[in-house]
Amino acid sequence: MSLTPADTPQPTAISVRRKIPLSLIVGGLIVGLHLLAGILTILWTPYEPTAMVGGRLAEPSIAHWAGTDRLGRDLFTQILIGARIALEVGSGAVLVGAGIGITLGTLAAFATRTLDDVFAAAFDILIAFPTLLVAMLIVTASQTASLFTAVLAIGIAGSAIIARLTRILVKRVLSMDYIVAARVAGSSWPSIVFVHVLPNIWPTLIVNLALQFGLAAMAESSLSYLGLGAPPPNASWGRLLQEAQGTVYTAPFGAIAPGLALVTLVIGMNLLADGLRAFADPTRRRSR
Image (cartoon, rainbow, N blue to C red; front, side, top):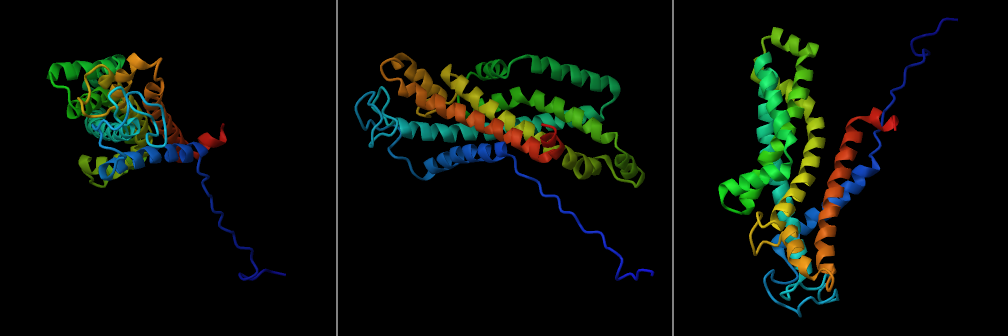
C-alpha cells in the first residue's frame, strides 16, 4: 500500500534553546548592583559627600552603614560615589579605546603586507607596556590630573589590545567566500566593513570590551591612589584606599569597604565577559 502525502511522516522542527550560563547571570547581577548604586548617587545620597556628619573613624552602625572616615564623612556615601566614578571611567575608557582600537585594527587588516607588519609590530610593542604605566605617562605629560584625563589616558593605553584583536578578526572575516562574493557584486569596501565585517566580529569584541571595562576601573583606582586620578572631592575608591592606609590597623573597614567594592566590580565584569563568551559559543560550553 502506497502512502499518500497526508500519510507521509513530516519532519518535525527541533528548536534549540540556549541555556544562559551561570557566570553571565551572576556577573550581570554584580555589575547591575554597581550600576544601580552609581545611578542612585545622581538622585540621592545618604549624606552630603563632603559633610562631616559623625565622629572620626566611627565603626559601622545604623546611621553610618560603613562607618566614617578620618574626617568624619559617611564612608558609605563615599563608596556609592566611587561606584559612579568607576562606571564613568570604565565606560568612557572603553569607548575611547574601542574607537581608536577598532579603527586602527581595521585599517591594519586592509593595509598592504608591509604596512600590516608595521601595524602588528607597533601593537605588540604597545601591549608590552603595562596599561597603568602608559596611563601614568599620559597623565603626567598632560600635567593635569582630572577625571577626563584619566578616561582619555586609560582608553588610549588599552586601545592597542583592542586594535590587535580587531586586526586578527577582520583578516579572518576578509578571507571568507562571502566577502569575495560581495566584492564581485559591486559592494564598496566601506559597505563591506559596516555590513559584513563589523557585525561578524562584534560578538568577540564585546567579550574583550567587558574585560577592558574591569581593567579600566582598576587602572583608575590605581591612578587615584597615586594622586594622578580624579582630584578631591571626587570620592574614587583608589583615593579612599590611599586615605585609609594610615589608619588601616585602627579602623580597617575604611580600607576593606572600598577595596571590596573594587574587587567585586572587577570580578563581576570578568564573570560577565566569561558568560558572554560561553553564550556566544555554545560548543565551548559543551566541551567543558
